[in-house]
Image (cartoon, rainbow, N blue to C red; front, top):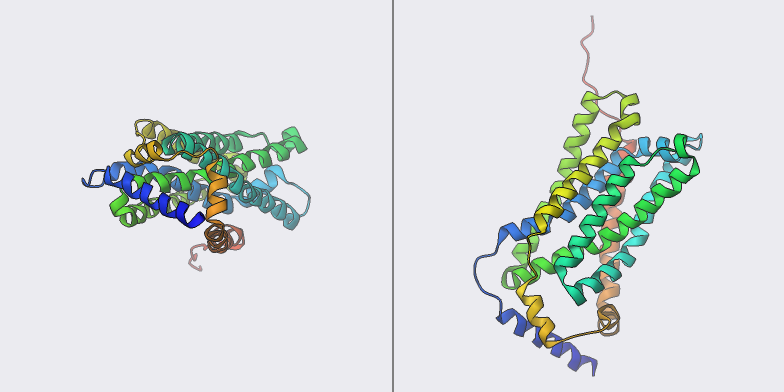
Length: 288
């Protein structure tokens, strides 16, 4: 029974793909779909670079190591929220359209990023500030959990016959968020003192991410639902897409979780956890 259902799914997808024009891939659409993923990578690197300032602002325990542990625990909360966000936003995408799902995720992710930047510190609000910061991080992680998968689905359905190339270009654009984060960090550290970085410098870096997300959301507002999704929806309807996926493709889901989980753990270790421990290289001063 399940095998027949899977064949039916493949046939439905193929039928939908036949209705999609073989015209040249709309690269503007691919770039706009990459905005949210780029913001995710930007947030990834920025959080790691400015973690010492976040620790002092929201988790001042009196012990530097303990504060950093609390800061990265808050970062991990975002990862715990990703599966929930993936299920909820994935359901919205399957039922109502990919565009709606990843547009909603980007708007919420932008709002939470800006909220983290504008959140009063522990010195102003006490433990309430710490709790609110973690709550924003949780919501941000949930949005990220639905953003990139939704964007990938949108890209694949926009160019079903060149999906490999389209996704490759998309991920190249997504990784540009890491480069932008490094450039922003370099500029802020070059112009601001350590005290200024603690007072407002790290917040400026987060606000840059929020601003980019807002611009991206506005640019995405003109995107239309993919023809492939509209065609498939006419032939197959499911009340609970997430449940159907788990029932029919549970092995693939578990395998993917293992592969992606290992990849994300390595990225988090190298790009976030190790960054605060790297000492900045200072130029040699000539001896007199």
